Amino acid sequence: MNRPEDHERFAELLRVHHTQLFGYLYAMVQNISDAEDLYQETAIVLWRKFGEFREGTSFFAWARATGRYAALNFLRVRKVRRRFSVELQADLSEAFDELDSSLLQARLEALDECKKSLKEADAQLLNTCYGDARSFREIAEQLGRSVKSVYDALGRIRAALMKCIESKVAEKERDS
Image (cartoon, rainbow, N blue to C red; front, side, top):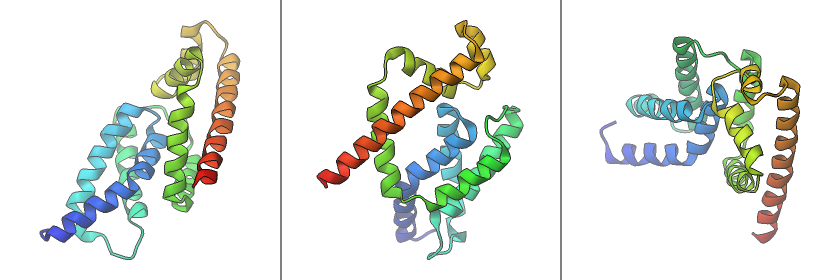
């Protein structure tokens, strides 16, 4: 990749697909910090191998495959317990292919807004459960709660976030 237009094309494709790729990596490792590290590693590999990318094919599919290998290697090396089965990860991978990046971006922006409206205790529980590499059982023990109460609370929080996201996205579409 020696031509300036290749550099510009790569930067533009990575920018356009940043949210999708980061979301995919986060879904794989379930930790924001690890996902950020994996995103950087994946971007470097993609940069080095951009000459292998074929124009007219899906950049995101190519980037996602590269990221998937990086994430699986990360999980293997760290011996991190996965919260999602391999089958569910494959389903997530296929679903990411079908997502419209502008809709995904709108939903992620809405999620950020909606998370700010959560009660502090709910926000902390969400961050603890999805930001730590610990199991829900360990988290429940730390909080002095049953695993069922943690799952129930997360279900309530996710339902509230989904309702908020759908409302904000619909509102944005009406305003457009």
